[in-house]
Length: 449
Image 1 (cartoon, helix red, strand yellow):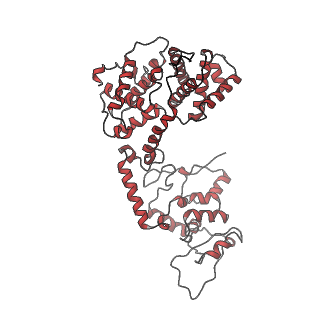
Image 2 (tube, one colour; image 1 turned 30 degrees about the vertical axis):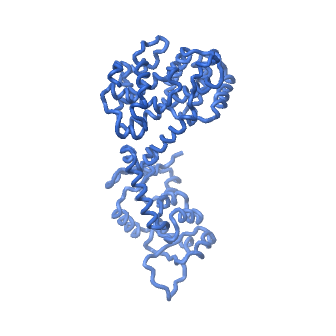
Image 3 (cartoon, one colour; image 1 turned 180 degrees about the vertical axis):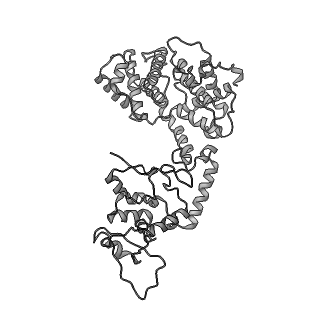
């Protein structure tokens, strides 16, 4: 079934949407002669005001005629003043707009020079655009016709007080000036939501304390070791590579695993099952197309069956109280790098440092926002790009003294000798796709402090 693309729709095509669908025709894809390329979900017409007026003139000279049975002509009043603008109303059934006509103080007349589109857009100005769209739909106007006239999504500020509107605009301008420059550039971007970005990450920071993980192996009740956990995380990274999952999925899965192990004593026999179930849950949360259960069973060499896998999935969700909106260090890292305007090479190096930290049990208790800041700081120093100052300090809320201890810990991890069983991350970031950042020699501690 062919579905027309509104972004490629030719507004000058005289064939209606219904006729095109009925005949199975493809719309003419034309590039606009003037004006910028049209953006998705934005203004779907590229015509300037002069072009729109010229188009309306051409339509008024055409042969398009309105069916008289669908139009009511209001009787003229000799004592009334002549109308400066003629308006038309469309009614598909005799009683569909009766209440609207009775409540309206303006008379509707038929204009031989008005087109069908003009009859929809020239309704009484006392109605808002959204209300007018609802009236058109109630009158039986085809939904496609109403959707093409997107004026009803424009906010009409005429109903509010002018003074209040000016005050709101002044407040918004002050808020915009207080944002990082990258957010000011994307202030009105509906995808980057620069107007809300800083508030979102401030909210993430407030939620961090809700998901803090204690040093659960230090109480003597845990049945697994730090090496077992590191091997599990290394295997989870391998799953993320094999299934081509997002990095957010990996970080959330490791977080779920640690939260479960900190609350439920587990044996090493079920450690792989816990990790696999955590990756599966994170995939459902972050991926568009998560892997199947059978894929996890296969990659685990049939160590457990489908029923066991589903039971563990339910158990992990129950233990974490079904709250998967966990702030993870990877999201903070991307935010800080964006505010600091880091290059992709520097960001990739910081990602490598942060991913190495996933295997370190001693860093389980650290705040994710602090870990991300420390990883980016080390990457900046290693590549001699930028400094921890200015907008990144303001956005993160952390001075160097706040991340100093974590910088020392992470740099110590980078200087540690590689463990043969834990080679997945180093091998991954030694590839040219990741700019071979794992081959960059770490800095001496004195160069970081």
